Amino acid sequence: MSSQDSAVDQHAMLFQEMVFMYQMGAMQSLGKIMNPMTGKVERDLNAAKHAIDVLAMLESRTEGNLTEPEERLLKHSLTELRMNYVDEQANPTPLPEEEDETTADEENATEDDIVADTDAETDTDTPHAEEPE
Image 1 (tube, helix red, strand yellow):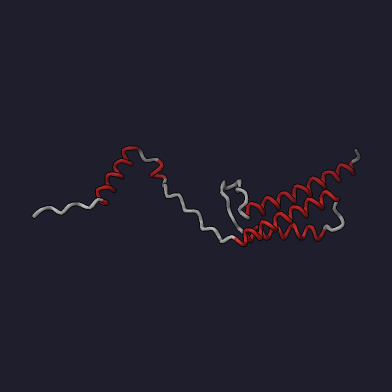
Image 2: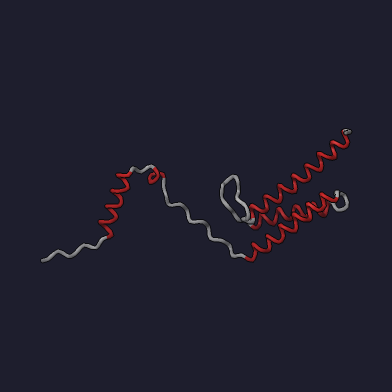
């Protein structure tokens, strides 16, 4: 294998990596897959549109210069992303997830603390009978 063949193979691999990178970023932004950095499913349609637009620009700028497998990969990725984008646009914006109300103090509370808190809540929440006069 010549060094020219090696460079061509490396470029093909880098092209594929770049398409996958933008595709995965768009899928995360569409809320289709979990963000590995946050561990949450997040939705940002503007970011998804940007990633799709970058791939569309790449398709336009490389027209006639891609191998058949590269062209198929790019077209397939764009088709899948565009369909998912339209689907997500039709869905109402999800409400932000309710924050976990557990505080650090509650996480570190002992069983006695929890029982004491429960007793205090019970005392204030229970209506008391009126005392006889």
